[in-house]
Length: 168
Ligand SMILES: C=C(O[C@@H]1C=C(C(=O)O)C=C[C@H]1O)C(=O)O
Image 1 (cartoon, helix red, strand yellow):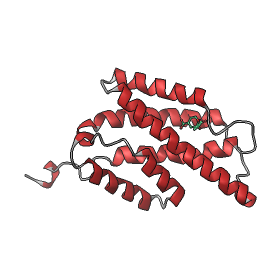
Image 2: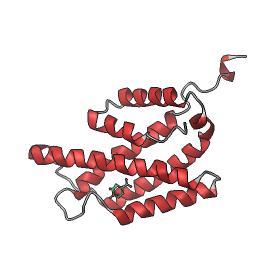
Image 3: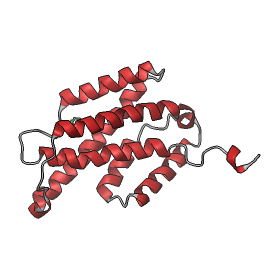
Image 4: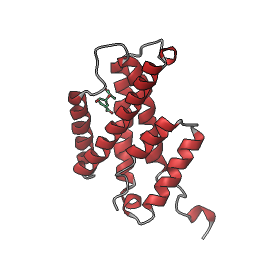
């Protein structure tokens, strides 16, 4: 067997990277909502996200209920970052954002990441079922943390977002 026959060293890296990409949007969402009447929690938008990913999962033969559970975690993790940033900006107004992104534009980015993440979850069903899932997931999370120089808030949220990636 040659080196190229080896299975990928880091099979859960794409899922982990997409979860981190999705969390990076929380900074923009928080900036869009800061100083407005838009609350961090938007149950109607959450329902729309969950219904859309469940439909996408069904279309590609993935388990829609499992995908819903994984995305429930993505949403909770996203709100964790938003709440953390609001707390920081309240305590240190000089750190608050000075420009306000358009929430609808940010949500279009989130929609694209959602679609990629559903696909990536479906593609990694075997890896996520394997006994090695947890160590592989931890390795991928550490690599993403180090490469992106993530702060504690985003890394804690990343860990929260990965809670149900492994099926065992
Ligand atoms: C990201 C947002 O904030 C919250 C988190 C959501 C998500 O992670 O998809 C959806 C709605 C909000 O409860 C948003 O309002 O778009």
